[in-house]
Image (cartoon, rainbow, N blue to C red; front, side, top):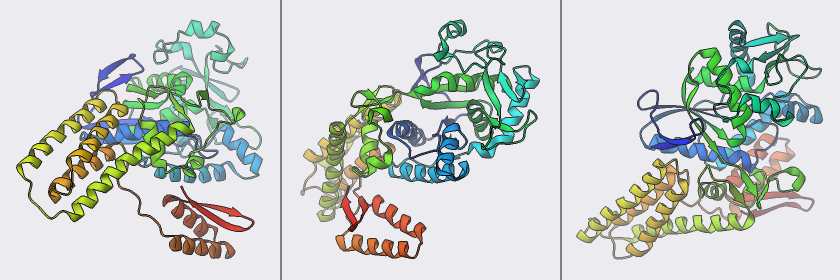
Length: 468
């Protein structure tokens, strides 16, 4: 299997540090609101990478954090008049619901930044002891120029950064030795969460969080570090600097980055009014459609999101589901059990589609070509499977479609249709729970219905519902 390594700017044969095992770290979201579809892309892409590696027989230790202390979280907490912990806890739970809807497997470990502060303080102290960091009145900075390889991931030159204007510099206060030095620890501000440290009360900088969590749960040297391409500089560059200076060894062998997601060919932003959360998309589409849409392009290619493209993705996924449904119906009715000679020949032929699928995935996780191989198999199923075929043959072809989709995290089996009276009964149960102020149960019923493709809308006239 070959992966494109941002560090070397080329495809390389993947060779793990320990045979048969993969240590993989993916930067997770900052939890101050519902995740948006830009957050969803790395979640889906690197979940698929993990699934494929597990399919290849690797034991994958997959770590993805939640950043649960941050300026945005604090701002949201102040706005609502609640604690930062209440905000982060709420949106971690909402994020996990969305991940489940997108069929993203839970990580081996989902560390929370706030629960790893002790390790971060120890790491910062080691950097100070090694003279890679210094304390100025309670703010600890990293000496960027002391790490001679700084810029090796983003392929930026330090002197170019220095003369390249403020936009490329890592925030420059007067107290720094060098404007390029970045923060490892910052002193507390009024009304913000803080922790005690040798440099006074405060909280860690963002970059040190991931370095410490990767080290604790995966070790000082890991196989794969991944995330969106917006994290290459400065976040991942700074992670490399502080990790390698602290641990004295290479941090990650392979760096994988997905490209940006645009909306109607423009960058997503709230000011343009083209900002969509995963939850909003789930009210219009099954999130399997969103997953299919994301995987229908190579992860390193910029991806454009639009209503037309989502409709196309929905129709394409429907072709796979319809083929799988048809094969199930035919197999249920089929009477013959054993394979005949012609069926044996045809089953030999379908191995070619799995080979194409694997070749695509082995070539830097080319999910677009892997999906093309699935569609070739669907076309085969539509032309080479009928009422005259044996149960065993029909089941084998169907299992092949389901199996290849499963590697991509796509469910080739349709959800069971919920009857109208079942929906009405659940809505009534939810209304009773709300009257009894049992909001936990009411939310659970709403989520249960949403998972079955039923969207509720609370209006003045009562509860309205529709199918996604």
